[in-house]
Picture 1 (tube, rainbow over the protein chains, first blue to last red):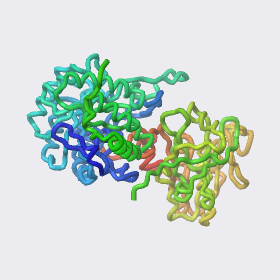
Picture 2: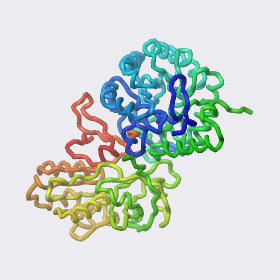
Picture 3: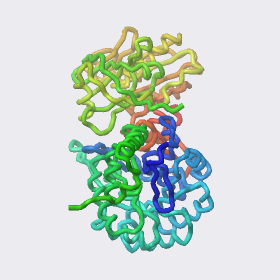
Picture 4: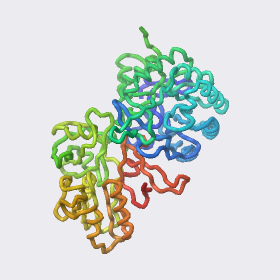
Length: 305
Length: 257
């Protein structure tokens, strides 16, 4: 694979900026049926909790203009099952292993990091999910409050040397404040953005389409919001940004990088075209060759008016 | 060996079966050569973001073509129904596990509504491999009846065609001689599958049901289309993926609600 796609997210070197976004690739196993995962920069695991979770009941997906709402609710097999059954698979895939860590309280996150830290030889970074909108406690509740973000990040910082990437929610007034809080707590990077909270209603029954009532909006429709947030944070942060939200082709990747992202996560578009990262990778290589550049040189090159 | 499993396929035939249901034929040798009854394809729906899942209704392996049935239920299916012959669309497939007919001599296929489409593919396959097949199909009324063939047991809720009542009224006309060697397969609305499962289990027959849930990816990666199956854990059930572990489940595993 071309070295032109090499990027760094802090101390983490990735052979490509393409990371599969948490919650849209499970642990990679299913997608290995579709393409060779070693082309990827990384895989971010399904959001994990200490105990297994069945997730939310009923209808979990609703289509929207250029995207979808989901309310899966962190269904996952639990971190212990993951370590025994999926971590080795991820490590052997050849992509960097990003483990997405979720919880309902500070204690949950501490438990999770303590449980994962002994397996650090198989993990490249922990993505701390302070942004899932589909659970009643934790995640977005913590991730909406800069003080709580700083407090939890600094607690986790003391527990591990693994890179800590804090995945933030766009459902806040000032994304710079939450990103700066993560940085102040000792984060190695921030991941921007998780889904936007939304609702759809069945006009016949007057009930929300999703049984959870609300869900997280993702897909190409949210890309401008994510780009804006990456660009805003790039102006104030010293730590790297992983961009995420609505990427569907190589030009979207470049747009995120110009805005300030060092790497990107692709998710919802892969639900429609599972092998999309193969095309995006090839297109990015061609773009770099045609323009005589290394992709990482694009990061933060935005020329504002 | 990894394969993209996504193809650009051409619509080669289109037939209107009733006011809101059509039968579409697509050219795709890759899917036609490898699919089994009970599997489905995910087809792009015009301007809609997500693909839509459809059980495979028929296959011509020599010509490399397959059919699906589409009932209009929303914006996506409306656009698919309006596709003109010659239209090319993105299609992912074949997906899901499909029916396992191993170990039985007799198969009772039961379908309702759009469930008759995958039942049709099962019927075609089973007659070729030489199993004894009985088909029982149920519809709301005569106007809804589609893909009905000679020899099928037909029921309508309204009673304006075939036996009056649900498919159970049709199934009750059967004499089951060897329940241990008889498999029941059912595709239809949940209440129907639940009733047929109870009917089969009471008579000592294994029953396979094809579950349906709002689906996003079809590839097992988003966990949106989950189905409850029985489990010994604290919740008493476990959510599994309709698109990956299913859509076909042993009725005894399903935690019916």
